[in-house]
Image (cartoon, rainbow, N blue to C red; front, side):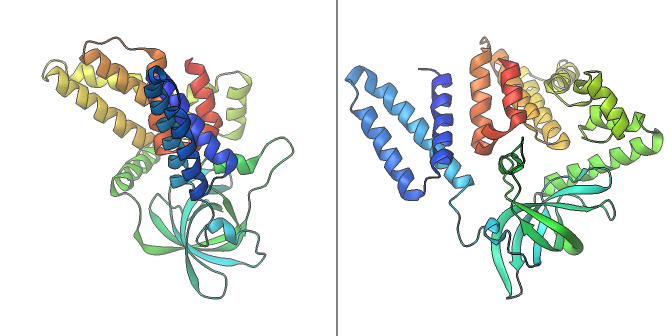
Length: 343
């Protein structure tokens, strides 16, 4: 039995929990049944069966923890009420410019439908004007209409947003900034540096050169003018303006080259690991970057331990670690394409 088999069982557990939308008692029954079947296997197969059953159960429970059954505090229960709502929350990711508006993810903590504020938990996607500009951690008071993401003719926008943990759209939104910050202080600092670099690039260079450099250096999506972005797409060169595992390898090699002469090999390893982590946080933890970061880190560890790196095992470890942090990544098209491209 290898890590590959355990990761497959883990992912099957996540898939089962989502497919059957199991409540807590259902998860307990699934766990008991899986462990019972494994224990009933012949003695020489029992140990393997128990480990696989434990991995399957752990995957199911992990999904349930990050995506619990709907409760009275779920934001999505307030979708499609018709009446405007007032909501309080904070920006949970760097806003994404989309031409004439900013697509902004907001973690909602309170809503008021006219009967007083109620504590909720959930994430909403909000389209806000380009100005004033908001950043990660900014607290907002929002008004608008909560709606369920639609299922289009050829594409399920609802499933796509669900893979990012978003189950609500706030339409016709108006925002009022509030004092204070929320979220992670480290991410505040990185977001500030990122905005400063973007400002410096846009001041020093005209478009489309500025947008191209922002995409290559900072991983900023949709920074190019629409006609230039379409030209890259038609030429099949969009990979040039997308941050990928190649950028992670450049960071690692740069740290190794700088620290090789003055640091012990284990210090070099941890310096490289730290540089990878900061780079991922700086440009945004997209699925391809996370996959490349985990695999790059494991390859470095194997090299320092004098062990050979096995590609599929590293990919399995990266898949397990990424879905441990966010089980919904299994439904991310970006994650699926990155996974298949690595095989």
